[in-house]
Image 1 (tube, rainbow, N blue to C red):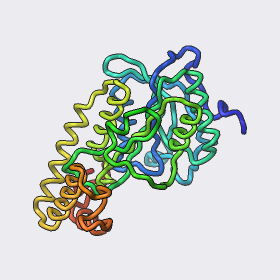
Image 2: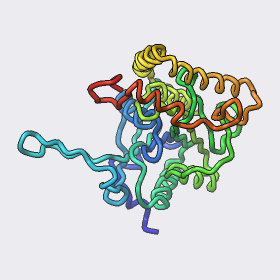
Image 3: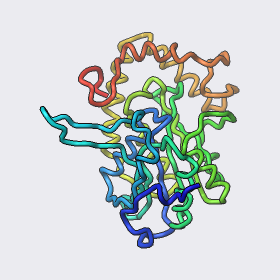
Image 4: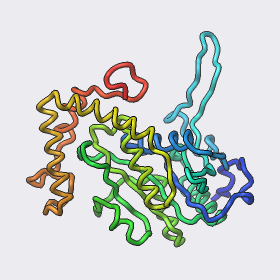
Length: 308
């Protein structure tokens, strides 16, 4: 394996950095339901003091054809070129406590080498604990709190936080590999998988970002501002509720999700919050199609629909 340190360019001398900090990580890639990771990254970098420590090499890790850079065409010439970015930052929370933040795209190539680079940084900087965030779509209602599934090696955290604890196989991510390698070396690590209403999975759902921040705070004790996100979420949910209330079929579908969720949370004999009362797994089409057609939700920046 080539030297993992060749994967990044150092912007701040590593020997000048404080040691023993938390490392928070969020990489956009295979799954980012509700825009949890993308919102978390943009919100923290916009809201808190941040210094770029190092930047990973796109030409080595990125498939440009899968994630093309943004080009600005200004009438008759190109005026800007903006490739995606994967960087490590030194940041401060609201109380001025420092932490490290790894944020950007999930590498398309050289996962083992990338993982080795992150583990090397964890050792070099004597990272106290690594906490990473992902979100996946699930048939759960938006009228209930965002649930989380916890992985890692921190004793008691899963018992305290996890609302769903399956034994299953799923497509892996680069952060899964890093978590696995950290466990092998005996380093502290926690994975937080947020369970997002699947009919809102393609939107930027502010409640998911709030849930990500709250769970990170629970694990690390760091304090982050959330007022703007909470205000955005109130407006978002108000729009959703108003339109659902105007359609009896949507009300029935959301009500069915609420019943299954509440039964599961009350220690129902149901095996999972994903199942019907008769034990069958609900079809995505059954719940999502009406919602998608009626709400006509769109990602932020669209001109119609809910403007999501």
